[in-house]
Every structure is written in structure tokens, then in C-alpha cells.
Figure 1: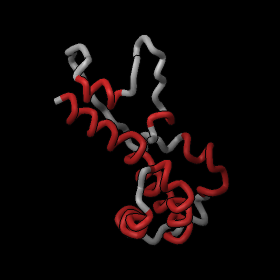
Figure 2: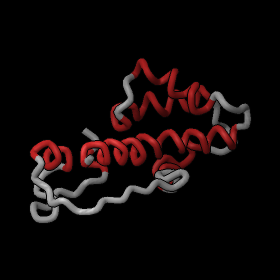
Figure 3: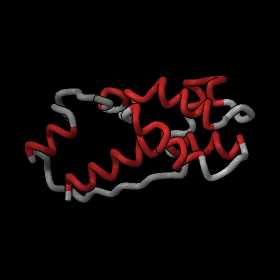
Length: 123
């Protein structure tokens, strides 16, 4: 469960996880707007990983090893790692671009996909 990475359940504003609130339909009806920026999560990943996300060393092997290391936090099954690596990093041979594409993958998993899922649940 990745909720603890970015959800604060304080008992007042969020008495339960967003998924529980939506499942129970115990939320107020209010306008809801979702927006996602380019590399939404990309600013914190290099801070957290330091040299693991080096601009000069990024290749499919390094990306795969990072995904293996963090696959449970990213909620990516082990058998999907090769497909995710190819889908995101297979577009270029440039290591700098590969690093940016890997950050896109992390941003999509941590911000993009949860935003879309939340929007669908609210709908």
C-alpha cells in the first residue's frame, strides 16, 4: 500500500484513506480539478537516490535495477519491469534523456496514475 508515502490521515480532514472514503461514498460533493506537470515527481527522486540516478550512467540495465529495488513501493510487479523499462527508456540511446524518461515513469506511478484513478472513482 503506497498511501503512506503521500497521504496524511489526521482523523479530521482525512479520517480514513482516500480509497476507503471513496468506497464508502462518505465524501462531500465538491468540484474537483486534477492537474499534472511534466516530471511531477522528478524533483525529489534525484534527492532521494543521489548517485543512483546519474545523468551520465542511465541505461536500461541501471533503470531495471532501480525498478527492481523499488518495485514494491512503485506497485509494479516484477514481471512488468522489462516492459516498463522498454516502454519508457526504449525511445532513445541518450543517457540524459533516459534519466528524464525514468523520472517520467516514477512521476506517472506516484502522481499520474493515482490522480487518474481518483478522478475515475469520483466520477
